[in-house]
Length: 86
Image (cartoon, rainbow, N blue to C red; front, side, top):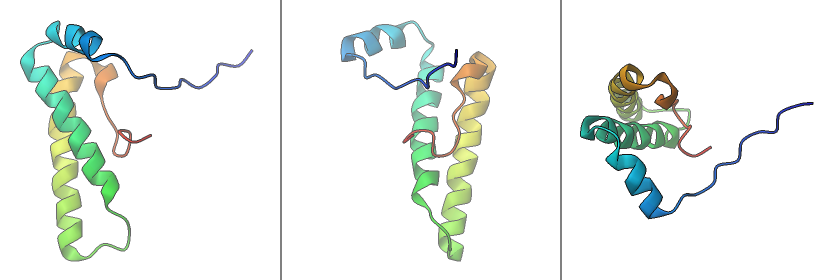
């Protein structure tokens, strides 16, 4: 028997609010920051000019900072670049 891939299912806003109310505010902010940074990293495609490369590295740094906070709270919350859209 093989496991089927998990399909993301949207959850109602009230359920998301209930889940969020159980987490510290710093973790919620880090989760939002990681999601935004992962989208920003995914936006850049090769070949990159110098300005785009600097912006991509800035987004990667923001993602790393957010992941550091999320990983200390729960390693299962870490995001990879581009994971926000997949």
